[in-house]
Structures are given as C-alpha cells and as structure tokens.
Image (tube, rainbow, N blue to C red; front, side, top):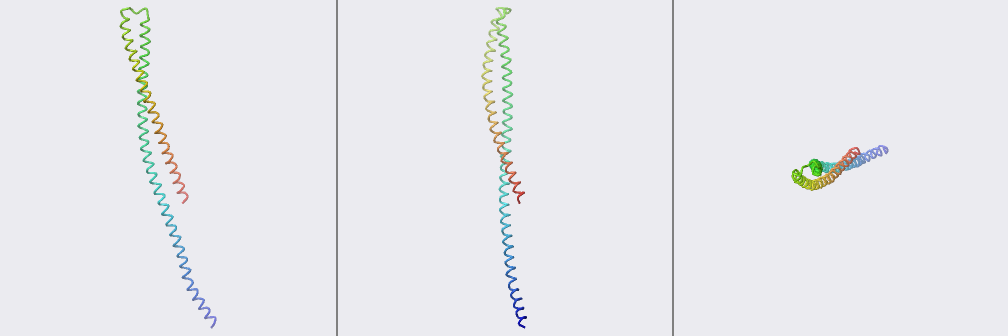
Length: 176
C-alpha cells in the first residue's frame, strides 16, 4: 500500500508539473512568434523605405533624362548653327580672295575697279560680322556642351544610386 501511495503522489506531482512545463513551452513559443513578428515588421518598414527611395530616385532619373535630352537638342541645334556660320564664313573668305584677285588683275578695267572695291568692302564687312557671330555662336555652343556634360554626370550619378539600391534590395531579398 505504501507503494500505491507513492505512485499516486508521483502521478499527482507529474500532473502538476506538466502544466508548468506546457506553460513554459507556450510562453517560449509566444516569445519566438513575437520576436518574428517584430522582425517582419522591421523588414517591412525597411523594404517600404527602400521602395519609396527607389520611387524618388526613378522620378529624379526621369526628370534628369528630360533635362539631358533637352540639352542634347540644344547642343545639336547650336552645332548646326555654328556649322552654318562657318560655311558662310568660308564662302565669304573665298569671295574676298576672288575680289582681291580681280582687283589686282591687270585684266580688270579701271571703270570696274570701283564697283569691285565697293563689293569687296561689303563682303569684308559681312565677313567681320560673321566672325563676331561665329565667336558668339562658339561661346554658346561651348557653354551648352559644358552644361550637357554636367547634367549627364548628374544623370550617371542618379543611375549609379539606383543600381546600388537595386543591389541592396536584391541582397536583402536573398538574405531572408
């Protein structure tokens, strides 16, 4: 009988001990779940921030691409204008040479010389104006090219930031 009593007390102690162990296990599981939820919340916050940053970067890239396209168009237009001015100057220079050759020629009658001198003076004046116009056009072209290089550098930096963010997001995705 003594053994039966000991056996009953042992069962009673085991029954009382089991809820404690179950409560401890349940508490551990709940703590683990809570930690995981907190980690998921942190990951979601980080990902949301990264997505928002990516959206801002994409908008900035789009805006910068527009600026670069506009500047390229301006540079192309200024280059065409400069080429036209240079072509006109080349024609004027050839006309000046022809006019001077004609004036210095013994074949030109004295009566025609006055007309050639007046025409030559007009061409030289146009050539001088063209030279000033060419210098101004060259300055505008150079300034536009410099501005284009600056804006292209900004675009390249934005694209590099976007690439880094993409790599960071990819690493984070593989890490989880």
